[in-house]
Length: 236
Length: 201
Image 1 (cartoon, helix red, strand yellow):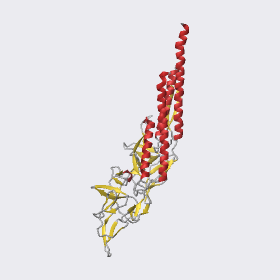
Image 2: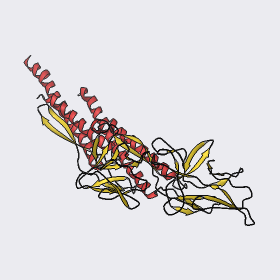
Image 3: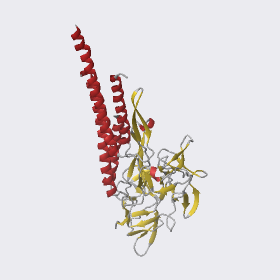
């Protein structure tokens, strides 16, 4: 009975994860997650248990967005962001200019390495992350360089919110990577990375989880029925 | 063997069958899981359920991740767990750990022909187990002879949910039948003990 119940719990968790993926399918830079399971007990007779989540770090499609400070990563890596002294790593590049000239996303995470001067009229970002501003009258200024970092095991990063991640012992420390050129990750300016959630696959996963849940519920029912019959034995 | 005791073993055997099916069903989302097949035999001790692991390979499922590995057809690759034990495996979702080794969900590292494999993030693995980085061969997977490696695929569980549900129902009915028979024997004995004794008095 408990084996079947563990299967129901697993499918419920599966559904939660897929639902979370679907809910964020339109969030730029969102990475789909997947729950993984392993059998437990001798001969797996105790059912199943979750052994954690894994982020799917596959590249999402890049889409022209038109935002004045939007950037996307073409290739592996994460933008390095900061909030209240805490480091975060994200592939969501939708930033806007704050009053102090820093670039922040909607959750207040600040893009490291860049400060836009107040008199800037247009901003351009090169493939290698160099930010230059045009303050009118053909005066070009450098305004910093976008920091991008990579992990040895990016799938083991831990989500802080929908799109910002933190390093974990399993992911290894973040290390800065070179940008631009044919061999390296490039920065695409004026573009955003769409989420890598596949709606069709998610719907299929929901159907499969639902059916598996029902099948496990049948197992619980059958065990319950057996116990009921055994309990009624003494009356006959 | 006494009828009531025999029926009790039949009920216990049916319960054990249900346990096997329930654990199979619980793992219909566990990649690489091998289901168990229950078999009920009649021996000197009555009905006994034994189970063995089902060796049929599960269906391969496309994932597109370069380090999801499965073996098509016969064969295996080798992994080493944290305690240093080396075992064969036919499917695993590997990811690069902090040292660049490929480790699966349970922390077992993938072995090459010269110990643990260390690869770059953009490495690819072809069907013969050759690891390439930027087009040049870097290492070989340690493989059982005749193995064909499928990168970007995982082996799903070899459990058929419909089949298991039928087994659950069958076990439930077998339990019921044994219980009904047990009750019938019990009733007959009741008659023997009470009515037959009354006739003689």
